[in-house]
Structure formats: C-alpha cells, structure tokens
Image 1 (tube, one colour):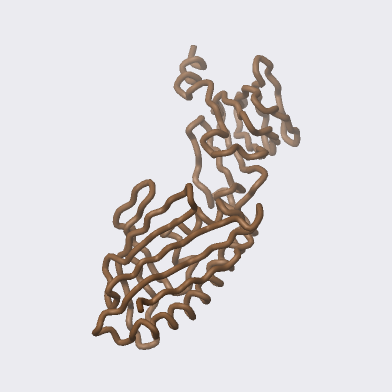
Image 2 (cartoon, one colour; image 1 turned 135 degrees about the vertical axis):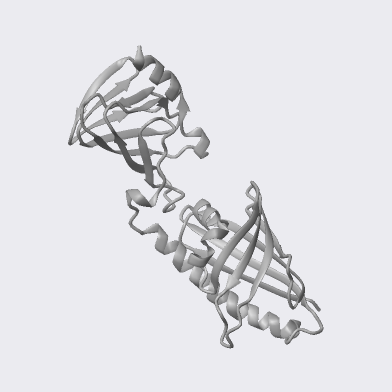
Length: 281
C-alpha cells in the first residue's frame, strides 16, 4: 500500500496568524529546523513554486527539491506536491487549519507517497521516518509561532506605509503578532507632511503625540495636539493629521476593533495628490 501520514498539533495563536505565517514559504528556515534555504521560483495569488534546501544530514548530504503549493483560503486548505520527486514516485501533501477558539489553531499535515524501486527505503520505512520527523517539525513550528506573538517589534522591523503621506508603521497587528482586537503603530511626520483624510467604518482610533505639535482635523473641526496629549477619533469620523510646525512629530496610534478584512479598515476621502494640490493654493 502507498505510504500515508497524518499528524496534527494545536498552536496557541489565532487562525489568521498561523495561516499567513506558515504559508509564507520564505519564512520556513525560521520556522522549521530542517530547512536551510527557500528560493521562490514562481508565485501567484494562490500558488507558489519554490526550491527547498535542507541542512546537511549526518552523512553530509544536502537534499534539495522543487515543490508547488496551492492555497485555498476559503477552506483553510493547502495542497502541494513535489515536482522534483527524487526517490519518491510521488509526494502529495495536504495541510488543513481550523480554529480551536479565538486564540488557538489546530494544524493538520497529511502526506501520501510511494517510493521508487531503487530508493534506499520502502514505503513502510519512509512512513515511520516521516511520522517521527513530522512530530519534531510540528513542535518546532508551534514554538516559533508562539514565540513570535510575544516578540518585541521595533519601528525598523516593519515596512513604512507612505500611501497617505507620512511614514506610518504598523508594529503590532494580526500579521506581526496575531492581535485579535486591534492594531497599533507609529507615525513620523516631517515638517509639512500629512496623513490624508480617511475614516474607519469598524474601528475607533486613539492618537497620542509623543513628540512635537500636531494638527488633527476631525470633520470640519481642527485641533492642536501637543506632546503627551492624545485625541480620540470615533468610528466613521473623517480625519487627517498634519505637521504644520518646523520640527518632526512622532505619534503612537491604536485602532480597534478590527475590520472584517484589512481592505475594509480604511476608506480614503482624499488622495495625497489632492491634498498637495490644495496645500499649494
């Protein structure tokens, strides 16, 4: 009979966080202890083809192969197969994810395979080997994911989002540490910079000025917020922030609760080009 393995583990982290992190194959050397490198050869919205390289084994052999991975977010299912099969006639894998509760996720890995006649081990021996190794790697992934939730995230650890003008960085979020009630970060505005007008249909926002003096527009009203002061932005309230001073301003923000999807969290009511054109007149 063909070889088959079926293993699962519960990770103390939310479903979205586990899904996003484990399906970023570029991060696998940081999650799995057996992989030394990943090279992405081709990627699309729901698929990725990549070369996976292992650390040398006890005999100094370095094993490497190409796989293709297809994700179905709606069913939280991943199917993959080795394209370069090596000693396998075929190797098909299926990963499934399901929430245990809001903060825990059950991750299940299944493998179906057949060894080639010239392989050094048969299906039964490989099944035993894979079952032993899968348990080790699942524990490693679980530990890595849970450690990421409590890590310290610096401003330099996340990319800058400048789509609305100033340097905005979301440090604690569903993507970085698996938050479930909101997200927070920092904004740095140089003199004359802005975060253009927008509103949040699902979230309230808390803006705390750490350094400098900030102009906060809430609808038609303007407020000045100095260092060590904060202002509250209600849900659906149009707002922008502007640095009219001659020095940099640093802001800490928090938004909660989360929108159903990230793309629903913000609604822009002006573009950066529109703001710049208006400010120049």
